[in-house]
Length: 289
Image 1 (cartoon, rainbow, N blue to C red):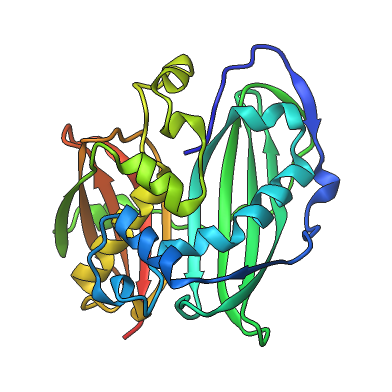
Image 2: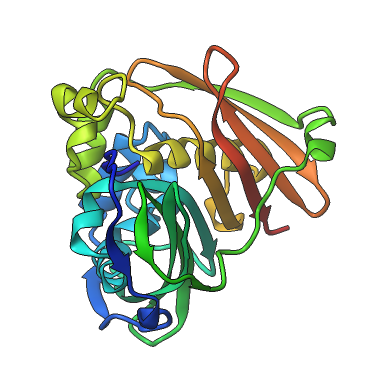
C-alpha cells in the first residue's frame, strides 16, 4: 500500500490523453545480493532464492518500479500522488528473473476512471531481457482518494475475481504465516520502497491508519510463497500468474492465513487476518504443469 489522504474539494484533472503512452525503457541489472535480500525480507526460505539461483516472483516489481511510477505520473496530477493507495497487482511470469539478468522495462497508463469518491488508474508494465525476450507483464491498479476532475477511458486491468461458488468449495490448502515486528523496515530496504506509512508510525496514524502497515507487495509475496509451497511443489518456475486485490491493512506482528481453492485449471485464494477479515481478496494463481 502507498500513501493516502482525504481531500475535500475537487482537485486538478487526470489526463486521459496520456493513455497508452509508454515511458522510456529503464535498464536494471539483477544482482544476487539484491534477490537474496528480497527473499529474506519476505521470510521466504526457498533454497533457490537464498542460494542466489532465482529471484522470488514478486521481486518482479523492483525492476519496473521507476517505469511504473513514471507512467502513473503521465496521467496523474502531481497533487494527487500523495493520495494514492495500491489497489490491485497482477503479475504474469514468462520466465523467472535470475541474478545476472539485464532487464529492460517500460510502462504505460492504460485505464482511468474518474468518480466522485476517487479515481482508479491502471498501469501496464513490460519487462524483457537483454535479447528482447519477454520476462514478465504486470498490471498495477492505483486508487486516488477524493474528488478529482478529468475524463475516463481505456480498458481496466484483466479480471481475477474469486467467486462465491469457488469459495463455497473446500480449500485445497491453508497456510498461516506471521509478519515480524521489523518486517516493513527490512522490506523497504530490500525493495527500494521507503513510503513513510510503512516506516513512520506517526505519519501512518496521521492518515487514519492503525500505525505502520505492511507493504502490500510484501503481503503479496507471502501469498506467492503459500501458492508455490502448496500447489506448485515448491517450484517457483511453475508460477505463471499471481494476482491480488488489497482490501485491508496488515500491521507488523499480525498473522495471515492464506486459503487456496481449485478454480478450473487455476487457483483462487484469499488471505485473512486473525479476526477472519480479508486482507487480500480475489487472489488468482496460474500454475504450469
